[in-house]
Image (cartoon, rainbow, N blue to C red):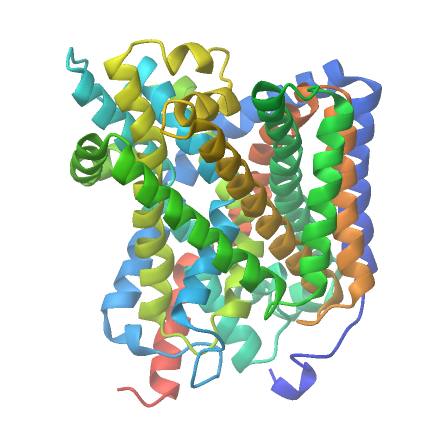
Length: 510
């Protein structure tokens, strides 16, 4: 491998196979949903059930090992290895972590933060013993949510895979593409052949499905909230207008590059999130939030391995843990590329601490701020949140929580703004990353970025035109796409150790 074989910054050669395969697949999915939504739903549900049954246990082990190996690399001698062949980071630590949080947490971090804790409070997870204590029920509900959005979820999104990619790309000149994760297994065959193009295509399909879904839900959720707050019609026109606005903003942001649009959006979104956190802590159920966070994290850590390896109720797992694991796995290779692009000059320890520890702990605190506040109100006045949540209505749960806070209208609007920017930053980063994969350049041309940005938004609009079932089918489809992607992630469990030790020796750290 010679670094001169690959111009790391400027070489651009469109991979037509990857582009056509992924585009036609996504368009075909949406067309089938438009022609026969019931048939598509049946096919997706069957595929979802099969994927969950056959691969669920493997995914649980994959995520657990990814986290544990990452911890080993960070706190052993390899933790001092500098990644990306750059002595100093390209951005400040605050900007770096802000981008990681806003990109990976996305809109799910707002609506799921409101909805998942109340869901587990109403129907306690089977791993926990039954209790009559409402506070303990709340702690168990938060602990289960912490597992789904905590250490394991974040680790699979860009730790071991980012280490492998940064070594092979920046040190050895291989392309910054998902196929590179399989280099140690298939060598040049996967780098230059059609096989590699198909691998990249599957990863683009998975991450596009994972991004189109939230974009579509953004239209549905914001439209619902606007109707409840201002009596604006909750119509297809309102929903599609919201999505068009998101398309315009995240496409323009992607065109501005990593040093402008996404940094600005992420920075101000973090400021807004910090303001809301401070507001709710000061004027909300302060004692409940602080106590439930501390005990919830302790409860989660105490039950970490039992929850992570729980297999007794596979039906429950399929609709909760395995669904989330499939969603995060689908994002895995593309997020690894994005993190590899923004993390040059960082050590392995910094990378693991930021992605596997700091981001999860912040996420857990955010879930306690939003979902914990909701649980406090529900305990004080049964039904105040759970009634709104009936039918698994995530936006209604969020709105019910904000309506119980001081200055409900202003806080509700600010949460909608926060959610919108979260989705926009995810759309921005994924538009950029998909363009990198198709073009082979870390500075892909504007037309390609616009193409992916508009395509994802347009497909989201078409899906919501057939009703929320189209978006729901796509969300379930994410789990199916995670099947091939999870196999692409597997070699990094071993290769990351080899690569880290090799870089440790090459950098003269022995």
